[in-house]
Image 1 (spheres, rainbow, N blue to C red):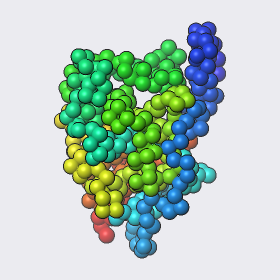
Image 2: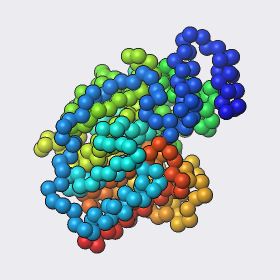
Image 3: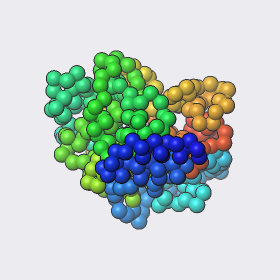
Image 4: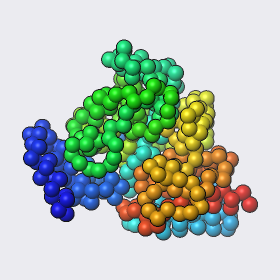
Length: 399
């Protein structure tokens, strides 16, 4: 508490004036809610943009027409129990394009909005595919100065859309650590009133296409490209072009200021069940009701290994995450918050992943999508990213 008081006083002394009232209110609210981006919940940030006001009566995928076999039910129950024992609040499975398993805990239900954190990056990759289908974007090979003309003649303008999709744009990181000090550029971006200013101020650190470096603001820059290409804000594009077509439900996003911008790399507040539908779009090769929503060729590229890191595609993971000291190996870490998996995936898998162990696993060989959303506290024990999908893969493979 003393540390918190010191930081808050320091912010006030800095005295950015009336224009920083929104920054201060968010900053203080964040710490009063616990000061952890995972456990703070989805309701602390103001203002928000409503992507969709209500949810359809029917789920975004049809219900299964046949009961589960005893073997399948046992496998799904085992996976759900592991998720819940490590703080999970939602666990859902679709197979063959139908909802076959849905379980909530910790007082949540189908309409509960969650912050999926960086699973939002995968949503943006799908939105880019939609914009290409609509000819708003010509190609992933385009350099971004085609869409952001003020970068013409700037080294950043030579970054391609595919570089950004692959996290190889070469931008510097906005901060070197995650300490919540008010003078950190990352903190000033996340709590401030102009998200895009910080994106556009970042300078090259590497030539484009030479190094994989997981960077939130390369995703945010990709979102700016989408906005310039479509002539719509990202949040409006989701609300008009993605949500209705997929039958998705109530959703919101954090705004930097009224009528302003949203962060594109995270924090699209959504229902867990809608991530099943987004994953199913990949399994269905971009088809919706016999119409092509995204070209299959784009989704093939999305799932393919990037040239610089085979574990990553277009804003999706092809292996368990190993960020910030994480690893794949049988020995569990002593620190529960570390990204860890006991082994690689047992079958080719595409994953959306978010801070706090929010996961969507897409397993093409089984026509399966599994969504796991963590609850409002960190797991007390290390969370094994591969245990749930591999347990299901092996169980269903024996049927």
